[in-house]
Image 1: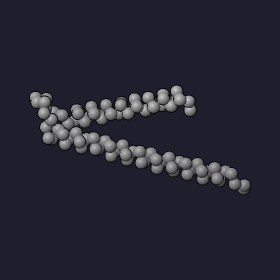
Image 2: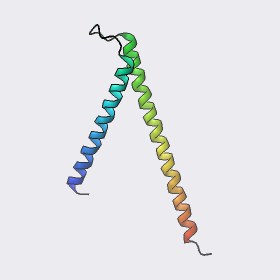
Image 3: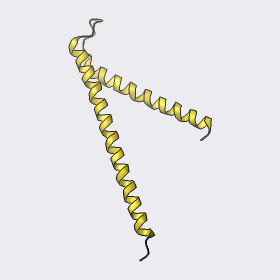
Image 4: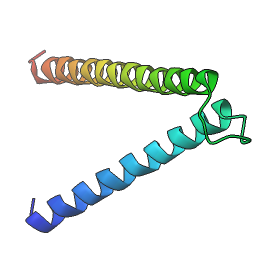
Length: 89
């Protein structure tokens, strides 16, 4: 890859990260923050926000693990198929 492509990939990755971060922040805010009569963050709002973020992080980790498992299975299947196709009959 050229340096320009690498920089473009980095920018794209960062934009995707920011988009995800903004969505999570908005979702957790909308679900957890209910009282706008004070500047203080209430204890239940704070714990709700923390739980929301932890749930998101765990979900993301689980999806990533399943995605990796799927790709390993696909690669093994392709390797097995290639091995069978390469053998004389």
